[in-house]
Amino acid sequence: MMALIAASPLTMPLQAEATDYAVTTLDVPGSSYTQSNGINNTGQVVGWFGTGDGSTSLGFLLQNGNYTTLAGPASTGYSVASGISDAGVVVGSFAPTTGVDADGYMQYGPESGYVYANGAYTVFQIPGYSSTELRGISPNGRYLSGFASSDVNYQGFVYDLVTKSFTMIGPVDENTLVFAQGVNDKGIAVGDKKVYDPSGYPWTRTGFTYDVASGQQTDYAFGVLETALRGINNAGAVVGFQSDMGQDRVAFVISESGHELITIDGAASSYGEGINDAGLIVGDYYDAQGIEHGFLAAAVPEPASWALMVLGAGFVGGVARRRRA
Image (cartoon, rainbow, N blue to C red; front, top):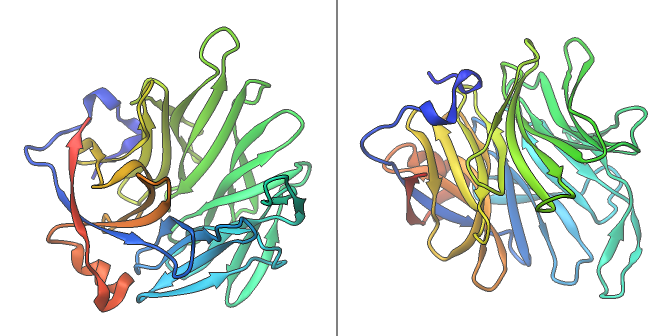
């Protein structure tokens, strides 16, 4: 079992053969774009979708090939579903509408997090912050992760539902934005730090892992311009995306096989967002026309059968090869 928190990107173990994935596009019926953000160990997928006129962006739950809309606590027309526990508890964010811009797109106010369980929404906000976004929930449902904004900047956090305590993730200064994303049962969160440098390129992004128990934060940089870690499973496998100067973003996975890129046929850019303990990966990609699609990637031949649980009998997909970075 790999312990990512203690590993160096330059010493990740490698195996002789990269793994083939069956990659299936996930599009909410009738939507203009779809993004899949999280997957639990029972195969349920959450994400969000929108309409072409920008009037609606809503969360969704995908199970057994069926999409269920998650409108959020206030049914404002803007909600995002970001993570789901093994018990089916969903976390995400929502915001009120504030008007329409010159191009006809709906505008929204400060965001609040939500927890959706047993058919009911509970609003989640960190006191003293102007907005709060929930991005992840551990498979056992103990930890919530996300980020909040204040007058200083964005700061990541992990909330322990057992001890009812917050752990804030820094640093906090006027040039650094810290975004916590996924979290596992061990209380290890992943995310990224976006740093502005007035003397050089406007910004760079570095991925990180953060161990709540020890307070250890470890940075990871695979792309010259940006590295973002988005999801982590209980074995320590991580998904995210990276890019270099003048190159499109590409999804990657870090596992016992090492750090490998995931290339998807027909994708101009791709993003790894979530991974479960069986190694199923969800994310999104943009095609050549600039349309965003969700995706589900399952190793061939196993655990491709898990995909049938998610998508039902209609599972079909192309094949993508992981290639080592």
